[in-house]
Length: 175
Image (cartoon, rainbow, N blue to C red; front, side):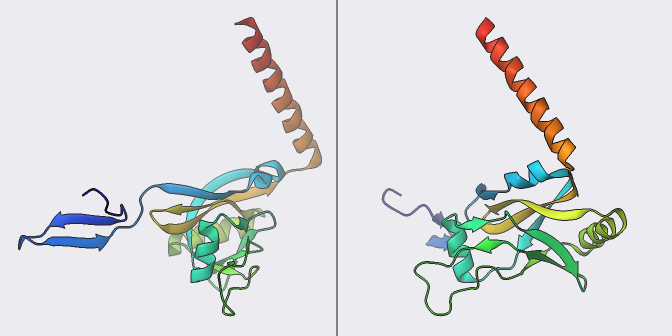
């Protein structure tokens, strides 16, 4: 099978012929990591959701051209939506290119959606996207139930990180 593209599978069929067919890529490829969310929020539960995208949006994501800095998720009329996520316009696209800042529908199981909507409504939590990635060729977003940090919490975390760094530095110098 030398010289054949790896995106195809080659196997013998029952009739003895060779079958060639496309295979979805396996594994996970990170596109965007929302580090700002870890800084601004206490992240509680996490859930994975699918994204409804157009073709040019998928191509832009494959190039890594997206941002989750201002993004959040909300539940409207029994559906989850990703609001404020920016997926850049595809460079080789035509006049039918997508709107970079449109709201995108999230795909969740009905029970997951009801649970998240209840927690957001009752406890005053927010749904924040933490990661955008491809899993087995499908675009996925990791959502986290989050509670906003106050300024003193952010300062406390900063002091804790610096202390941890100093300890690691001291241990490393002893070796």
